[in-house]
Image 1 (cartoon, rainbow, N blue to C red):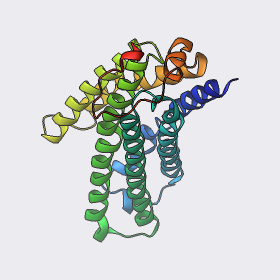
Image 2: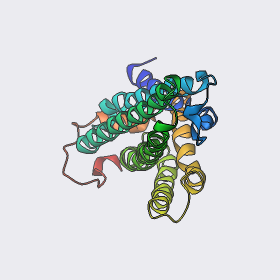
Image 3: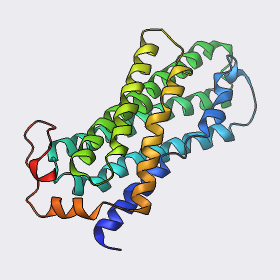
Length: 238
C-alpha cells in the first residue's frame, strides 16, 4: 500500500471505529431511572459504555489528524478548522463521560436520597453535552470536511452532499430540542440517521477504495493551497 492509500485506510477505519458507542443507547438505560443512585445493581454495562465513548472521542480526533496532510492542500485553514472541531468534539465527549462516571461513583458510595438532586443534574448535564458534542459539532464537522472533499473530489461528490443534507437536518433537530419543541431522545435520534450514514459511507469508501487517483494527482501537482478565508473551490481542483 502506498503512503496515501494507508492514510485513506487509517482515516476510514477510524470513522468506522467511531460507531462502537452505539450500544450506549441501551447500556446507559439504568442511569435514567429517577432512583438510580439508590440501587445496588451492577455498573459493568455503564462502565463499558463509558469506555466505548472514550474510544469514540479518540477515534474522532484521529480521523482529522489522518486526513489533515491531504486535505490541507485544498484549503489549509478549513482543514485546521476540522482538526479543531474534532478535538473540541472529543473533549466534550470526555466531559460527558465524566458525568457518567460521577453518577456511578455516587451509586457505589451509597450517597442516598440527599444526592438525588445531584444525580438528576448530572444526567441532565450529560444529555446537554451529548446534544452539543455528538449532535451539533458533528454537523459542523460534516460541513468542514465535506466542503474539502467536495471541492477536491477525493471521494465521489454524492458522499459530501449527503453530509451537507445530514448536517442541515441535525442542526434543525438540535434547534427544536433547545427551544423545547421536541424531546432530545426523539427528533434528534431520527434526524441523525443521514449524517450517520454519511460518516459510515465515507469510512467504508476510504477503507475499500481510498482517495480517487485523479484527485490526488490534481492536488499534488500544485503547491499546497493558501487559505484565503473562504471555502470557495480552488480552480485547479475543478
